[in-house]
Amino acid sequence: MQIASGSSNNMKNLQGFDSNHPPDPQLIDSCVHCGFCLSTCPSYRVIGKEMDSPRGRIYLMDAINEGEIALNTATVQHFDSCLGCLACVSTCPSGVQYDKLISATRHQVERNYQRSFADKLIRQLIFSLFPNPDILRILLFPLFLYQKLGISQLLRATRLIEKISPRLAAMESILPKITIQSFGNNLPDIIPAQGAKRYRVGMILGCVQRLFFSPVNEATVRVLTANGCEVVIPKSQGCCAALPEHQGQTEQAKALARQMIDSFADSNVDFIIINAAGCGHTLKEYGHILADDLEYAAKAQIFAAKVKDAQEFLASVGLTAELSPLSDKPLTLVYQDACHLLHGQKISLQPRQLLKQIPGVTLKEPLDAALCCGSAGVYNLLQPEIAQELGEQKAQNLLNTGADVIASPNPGCSLQISKYLRDRKVSVIHPMELLDYSIRHQKLEQERVIST
Image (cartoon, rainbow, N blue to C red; front, top):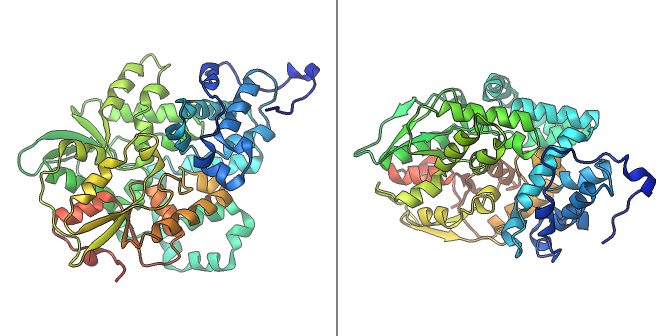
């Protein structure tokens, strides 16, 4: 394949990668360009261009490394189109570590490419808000009024925000419903195990999760304690660094990772539990993120080794609490594979094994289960057109199973899928909530609306 480039006289003047961890040439050379990644790559399936596929992006990385083309708007747009879903990593027969390649490239882009003013502005807004739960908490009341007074419905009906900025409109369109419960999110520092204590575990609350999905955290605590776990929740914990790390915000990601490690330093826990897929993948990568930090490199490795997704952990140690039916009639569930669980952490069977233990549950499998829903961290905010096509396809595939409930283990996926359900009476519920209802002998009809 030939990649267009300038004259040889201009090669030495091209802006490229710096010397701080550029995409590894050895990892690049492991790609044999077989094309197996094409059919599993969501951006390629939507856009249909070679350079918007993993194989194409690896060509670009190699050419920039060799000084043949520049790191500029023409090349950066193809790196930006990548969702980072890692489906290509699961598919590649040659074991190409595309995850490491795209991560290195994104950090290079943010250091060495000058984005437009509008692009920088929206990114600054995202990375100032979402990784900062304290700022998000301040915004809860204004957002509550915004929804309660019907301003949201008015703006959506007039499509005013969309006319101003499609990205801001995308952000507004997935805003979860703010309730009174959102303001009362205060879990104790230590919650004792019910019955004999089997483990002492730490729990990470997340940023969006702790404010907009607080019932998921509360359900996770109840499930853990019901199964013999003492739960420790350090109040000093902040963001896990997933969003800035995925988008190449190097220093912000490192600072947040250090803060998280410090918050659990004296907790004396056996495991550190997370119930959000994207967060879990990043937490397990702390050793890589802080590899060059002399003070934190070893701490990061120890911390990452303790991190377990809640479903991964419970499937491993086994449930001891009795489970009861969620409904008076047979209940059909479909499990939505979050990319950073399925492809990033290789967790797929464990959630299904847990859900199948609930009496009266039938589990369905959707078409294209491994294809990204389009959320991908903040991808649906930065690339709303591509995300919309993927979201509509994912929602339809889930609906086509005829399931009463969609079990979704990641807040971003839940928001994205809910947006495209088109008011269909199908609930999107976290697996930890389903286990919690079952353990507490609560019927799902009492808690959520399901199709009848």
